[in-house]
Length: 223
Image (cartoon, rainbow, N blue to C red; front, top):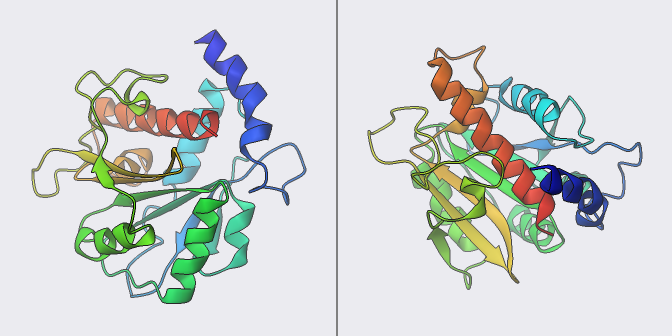
Protein backbone atom coordinates (compact mmCIF):
# COMPACT_ATOMS: atom_id res chain seq x y z
CA UNK A 1 0.00 0.00 0.00
CA UNK A 2 2.85 2.39 0.85
CA UNK A 3 4.44 1.79 -2.57
CA UNK A 4 1.13 2.44 -4.31
CA UNK A 5 0.65 5.77 -2.55
CA UNK A 6 4.23 6.80 -3.27
CA UNK A 7 3.66 6.02 -6.93
CA UNK A 8 0.42 7.99 -6.85
CA UNK A 9 2.15 11.11 -5.57
CA UNK A 10 4.86 10.78 -8.22
CA UNK A 11 2.61 9.98 -11.17
CA UNK A 12 -0.25 12.37 -10.54
CA UNK A 13 1.34 15.46 -12.15
CA UNK A 14 2.20 13.38 -15.22
CA UNK A 15 -1.28 11.94 -15.50
CA UNK A 16 -2.93 15.34 -15.40
CA UNK A 17 -0.98 16.83 -18.31
CA UNK A 18 -2.22 18.06 -20.75
CA UNK A 19 -5.80 17.74 -19.53
CA UNK A 20 -5.34 19.98 -16.50
CA UNK A 21 -3.31 23.06 -17.24
CA UNK A 22 -5.75 25.56 -15.71
CA UNK A 23 -5.47 24.27 -12.15
CA UNK A 24 -2.09 25.53 -10.98
CA UNK A 25 -2.66 25.83 -7.24
CA UNK A 26 -1.28 22.39 -6.43
CA UNK A 27 -4.72 20.79 -6.23
CA UNK A 28 -6.99 19.41 -8.88
CA UNK A 29 -10.77 19.47 -9.01
CA UNK A 30 -13.26 16.96 -10.34
CA UNK A 31 -16.60 17.88 -11.89
CA UNK A 32 -20.20 16.73 -12.28
CA UNK A 33 -21.66 16.77 -15.79
CA UNK A 34 -24.66 18.84 -16.77
CA UNK A 35 -26.59 17.38 -19.72
CA UNK A 36 -29.83 18.02 -21.56
CA UNK A 37 -32.94 15.92 -22.05
CA UNK A 38 -34.72 16.56 -18.78
CA UNK A 39 -32.86 14.04 -16.64
CA UNK A 40 -31.88 15.06 -13.12
CA UNK A 41 -28.11 15.42 -13.58
CA UNK A 42 -28.10 17.25 -10.23
CA UNK A 43 -29.33 14.32 -8.12
CA UNK A 44 -27.50 13.40 -4.87
CA UNK A 45 -25.46 16.63 -4.67
CA UNK A 46 -23.44 15.50 -1.62
CA UNK A 47 -22.22 12.29 -3.27
CA UNK A 48 -18.98 13.68 -4.70
CA UNK A 49 -18.29 15.88 -1.67
CA UNK A 50 -18.50 12.91 0.67
CA UNK A 51 -16.40 10.72 -1.61
CA UNK A 52 -13.71 13.41 -1.88
CA UNK A 53 -13.62 13.81 1.91
CA UNK A 54 -13.21 10.05 2.30
CA UNK A 55 -10.50 9.92 -0.36
CA UNK A 56 -8.53 12.75 1.26
CA UNK A 57 -8.51 10.80 4.52
CA UNK A 58 -7.20 7.63 2.88
CA UNK A 59 -4.93 8.63 0.03
CA UNK A 60 -2.24 11.34 -0.35
CA UNK A 61 -3.88 13.10 -3.30
CA UNK A 62 -4.02 16.89 -3.57
CA UNK A 63 -7.66 17.11 -4.52
CA UNK A 64 -10.00 20.02 -3.84
CA UNK A 65 -12.65 19.39 -1.22
CA UNK A 66 -15.23 20.91 -3.59
CA UNK A 67 -16.34 19.85 -7.04
CA UNK A 68 -17.68 21.91 -9.95
CA UNK A 69 -20.65 21.51 -12.29
CA UNK A 70 -19.76 21.70 -15.97
CA UNK A 71 -21.84 21.47 -19.15
CA UNK A 72 -20.94 18.54 -21.37
CA UNK A 73 -20.66 20.76 -24.43
CA UNK A 74 -18.41 23.31 -22.76
CA UNK A 75 -14.66 23.62 -23.29
CA UNK A 76 -14.49 23.86 -19.50
CA UNK A 77 -14.57 20.07 -19.25
CA UNK A 78 -10.92 20.10 -20.33
CA UNK A 79 -10.04 21.68 -16.98
CA UNK A 80 -11.00 18.51 -15.09
CA UNK A 81 -9.25 15.13 -15.12
CA UNK A 82 -12.37 13.29 -13.89
CA UNK A 83 -16.02 13.83 -14.82
CA UNK A 84 -18.95 12.25 -13.01
CA UNK A 85 -22.39 11.83 -14.54
CA UNK A 86 -25.58 10.46 -12.99
CA UNK A 87 -29.37 10.74 -13.01
CA UNK A 88 -32.65 8.85 -13.21
CA UNK A 89 -34.10 9.73 -16.60
CA UNK A 90 -33.61 10.97 -20.13
CA UNK A 91 -30.19 11.99 -21.42
CA UNK A 92 -29.79 13.94 -24.66
CA UNK A 93 -26.39 14.71 -26.20
CA UNK A 94 -26.13 16.42 -29.57
CA UNK A 95 -23.36 15.97 -32.15
CA UNK A 96 -21.36 18.96 -30.95
CA UNK A 97 -21.47 17.80 -27.34
CA UNK A 98 -20.51 14.28 -28.40
CA UNK A 99 -17.51 15.59 -30.34
CA UNK A 100 -16.46 17.67 -27.33
CA UNK A 101 -16.68 14.68 -25.00
CA UNK A 102 -14.79 12.50 -27.47
CA UNK A 103 -11.93 15.01 -27.68
CA UNK A 104 -11.85 15.30 -23.89
CA UNK A 105 -11.51 11.54 -23.46
CA UNK A 106 -8.90 11.27 -26.21
CA UNK A 107 -6.80 13.96 -24.50
CA UNK A 108 -6.50 12.31 -21.11
CA UNK A 109 -9.90 12.82 -19.49
CA UNK A 110 -12.02 10.20 -17.76
CA UNK A 111 -15.80 9.84 -17.41
CA UNK A 112 -17.65 7.82 -14.78
CA UNK A 113 -21.38 7.36 -15.41
CA UNK A 114 -23.50 5.95 -12.58
CA UNK A 115 -27.05 4.90 -13.40
CA UNK A 116 -29.18 6.13 -10.51
CA UNK A 117 -32.07 4.07 -11.95
CA UNK A 118 -34.02 4.88 -15.09
CA UNK A 119 -31.00 6.20 -16.96
CA UNK A 120 -29.77 3.04 -18.67
CA UNK A 121 -32.04 2.97 -21.71
CA UNK A 122 -30.95 6.50 -22.63
CA UNK A 123 -27.28 6.56 -21.70
CA UNK A 124 -26.06 3.14 -22.81
CA UNK A 125 -26.53 3.79 -26.56
CA UNK A 126 -24.80 7.16 -26.15
CA UNK A 127 -21.82 5.62 -24.37
CA UNK A 128 -21.41 2.97 -27.05
CA UNK A 129 -21.49 5.68 -29.70
CA UNK A 130 -18.67 7.78 -28.24
CA UNK A 131 -16.09 5.43 -29.72
CA UNK A 132 -18.12 3.07 -31.91
CA UNK A 133 -15.04 1.14 -32.99
CA UNK A 134 -14.04 0.34 -29.40
CA UNK A 135 -15.52 -2.46 -27.33
CA UNK A 136 -18.02 -1.64 -24.60
CA UNK A 137 -17.46 -4.53 -22.20
CA UNK A 138 -17.96 -5.66 -18.63
CA UNK A 139 -14.82 -5.47 -16.51
CA UNK A 140 -13.36 -8.88 -15.60
CA UNK A 141 -13.39 -9.86 -11.91
CA UNK A 142 -9.61 -9.50 -11.63
CA UNK A 143 -9.50 -5.90 -12.85
CA UNK A 144 -7.44 -3.56 -10.60
CA UNK A 145 -10.52 -1.45 -9.87
CA UNK A 146 -11.62 -4.33 -7.65
CA UNK A 147 -8.39 -4.61 -5.68
CA UNK A 148 -6.07 -1.61 -6.16
CA UNK A 149 -6.70 -0.32 -2.62
CA UNK A 150 -9.69 -2.21 -1.24
CA UNK A 151 -10.54 -5.81 -2.09
CA UNK A 152 -13.82 -6.74 -3.77
CA UNK A 153 -13.44 -10.54 -3.86
CA UNK A 154 -16.50 -11.10 -6.04
CA UNK A 155 -15.04 -8.91 -8.76
CA UNK A 156 -18.08 -6.66 -9.02
CA UNK A 157 -19.00 -3.17 -7.87
CA UNK A 158 -21.05 -3.03 -4.65
CA UNK A 159 -24.79 -3.51 -4.79
CA UNK A 160 -25.88 -0.28 -3.12
CA UNK A 161 -29.38 0.28 -4.48
CA UNK A 162 -31.76 -2.59 -5.27
CA UNK A 163 -33.04 -1.20 -8.61
CA UNK A 164 -34.37 -4.21 -10.57
CA UNK A 165 -32.62 -6.75 -8.36
CA UNK A 166 -30.06 -7.61 -11.05
CA UNK A 167 -26.37 -8.21 -10.32
CA UNK A 168 -24.24 -5.05 -10.18
CA UNK A 169 -22.03 -4.52 -13.21
CA UNK A 170 -19.27 -2.19 -14.34
CA UNK A 171 -18.70 -1.61 -18.06
CA UNK A 172 -15.71 0.11 -19.61
CA UNK A 173 -14.35 1.55 -22.83
CA UNK A 174 -10.63 1.67 -23.54
CA UNK A 175 -8.96 3.97 -26.02
CA UNK A 176 -5.37 3.31 -27.09
CA UNK A 177 -4.83 1.05 -24.11
CA UNK A 178 -6.26 3.42 -21.49
CA UNK A 179 -9.63 3.17 -19.79
CA UNK A 180 -11.49 6.36 -20.62
CA UNK A 181 -14.97 5.51 -19.37
CA UNK A 182 -16.61 3.46 -16.63
CA UNK A 183 -20.35 2.81 -16.43
CA UNK A 184 -21.82 1.36 -13.24
CA UNK A 185 -25.19 -0.34 -13.68
CA UNK A 186 -27.47 -1.93 -11.05
CA UNK A 187 -24.88 -0.82 -8.51
CA UNK A 188 -25.32 2.92 -7.88
CA UNK A 189 -22.29 3.57 -5.67
CA UNK A 190 -23.06 7.30 -5.66
CA UNK A 191 -26.22 6.50 -3.66
CA UNK A 192 -23.88 5.17 -0.98
CA UNK A 193 -21.55 8.16 -1.24
CA UNK A 194 -24.51 10.42 -0.48
CA UNK A 195 -24.93 8.83 2.94
CA UNK A 196 -26.39 12.02 4.38
CA UNK A 197 -29.19 11.97 1.78
CA UNK A 198 -30.05 8.27 1.57
CA UNK A 199 -30.73 5.67 4.24
CA UNK A 200 -28.25 2.88 3.50
CA UNK A 201 -26.74 0.41 5.98
CA UNK A 202 -23.29 1.38 7.26
CA UNK A 203 -21.65 -1.60 5.56
CA UNK A 204 -23.13 -0.62 2.19
CA UNK A 205 -21.90 2.95 2.61
CA UNK A 206 -18.43 1.68 3.48
CA UNK A 207 -18.25 -0.52 0.38
CA UNK A 208 -19.51 2.30 -1.83
CA UNK A 209 -16.84 4.68 -0.54
CA UNK A 210 -14.18 2.01 -0.94
CA UNK A 211 -15.22 1.40 -4.52
CA UNK A 212 -15.08 5.13 -5.23
CA UNK A 213 -11.60 5.26 -3.71
CA UNK A 214 -10.47 2.37 -5.89
CA UNK A 215 -11.87 4.06 -8.98
CA UNK A 216 -10.18 7.41 -8.39
CA UNK A 217 -6.85 5.85 -7.43
CA UNK A 218 -6.97 3.65 -10.52
CA UNK A 219 -7.74 6.60 -12.81
CA UNK A 220 -4.92 8.71 -11.43
CA UNK A 221 -2.30 5.97 -11.44
CA UNK A 222 -2.97 4.70 -14.97
CA UNK A 223 -1.98 7.39 -17.47
